[in-house]
Length: 119
Image 1 (cartoon, helix red, strand yellow):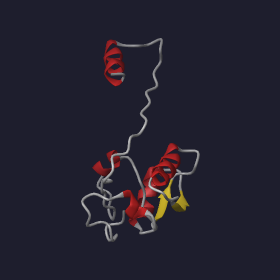
Image 2 (image 1 turned 120 degrees about the horizontal axis):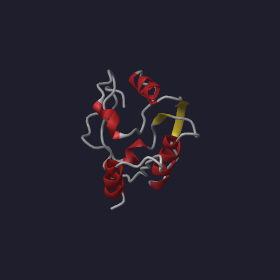
Image 3 (image 1 turned 180 degrees about the horizontal axis):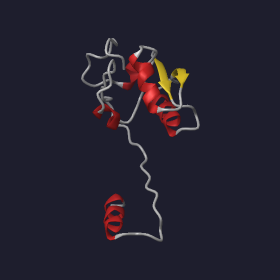
């Protein structure tokens, strides 16, 4: 969310608090869009998407300009993005994780990774 956002003082943000917010996200062809729709609908509202852009960096740039807020992977919080403050959601939201690999070139390290991911 933008640094000056009224929810920026919260240490964690309840999803319900986002009901009347404007969102910046990726278009429906990206999983981010489906994720946003699903998560918001779980708490009883449909997000108002004000802008759709093709790159996560553009999403963050628009958030920094105060155009809207977004739900984005917490790995982006590691970035020092000027004008953007990252806050975790109060609710834990499960997300799918996929791994793609060449079956003809499986290394011992890949076998260990696959074993760890499928536990």
